[in-house]
Length: 353
Ligand code: FAD
Image (cartoon, rainbow, N blue to C red):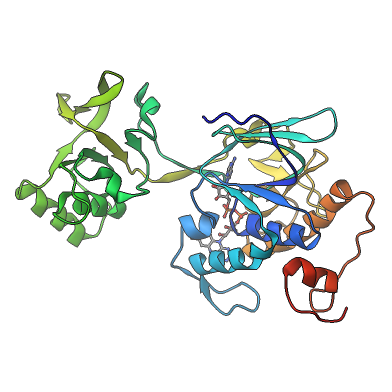
């Protein structure tokens, strides 16, 4: 965890960079409120990118059809003028009210903030990688234990163990086993059973590489490890017959998918109903003044978990927050078509107001 001497002081922190968190940046931007956005994932888009990047969405107003990934790209383009700062790959773990009314927010990476308002746009929870349940193994996270491939070249020439069963896992195992640009010294694939949730052609390819001794597949689960001089040197694999094998390695790539975890949000003392945050529909404020909840994470009579509804919620939440962030300002509704003030904020042409 990196040490940060002082918390970042800001007007607003948005927890979650899903479609609703991104549109929240836009609505706050129009009110000239600067924000920091935090997400557990290494990229924006939430469910749209994590669960259905290539699927068509048909119910975004005035957009006949776009995929989850396209929607995210468009939202990122739309909010670009506001210069929001994004903090990826970190989960918001701590929220604490301060005596001056602000909130202290800390993430799993140790980034901290002092903010006047918080917008929880956490959807179905933080998308965190499924981990191996082996005591002590986590200390190697980021050095020898990885949950995603950021740069395939990292594994060149390494003795690599890969755990998982889906297309992503097998594609990676094949990529590192073949004599291509990213060739590991050895590849051992581990999965609990001799069956995969992957395309048949990919499974066939993997088995061919095993027959050709370019990689190995072991049926079993990682049950322990050994370290040498502070480095992860060996993992123990328990087979279906209970026998234990040792596999020497340089790197362990665990690709068991991501699972949404509501996690610490439930401990922030906010009124909840069935794991959702209760809000009033005038400003989408939670039970704590200064904390708003928008998108799939909130609940109220008539709630519909749709992107369109989240966009509306973000709009009213921004106006609700303005009363806290800019109490001296008399906020008037302005149209983006005609307001020179909004044009200045958006960095667009010189239209008359
Ligand atoms: P999410 O998209 O869930 O994003 C929340 C983000 O918050 C995530 O990235 C998560 O990692 C992050 N996060 C959560 N907790 C923390 C934390 N503590 N710290 C850091 N980060 C955190 N809706 C439609 O309107 N039309 C459709 O056609 C449609 N199709 C769908 C198809 C599928 C298969 C699915 C699963 C959903 C579909 N939806 C559709 C629903 C839509 O995707 C959701 O309503 C929308 O994604 C909600 O957006 P959100 O920003 O509230 O949350």
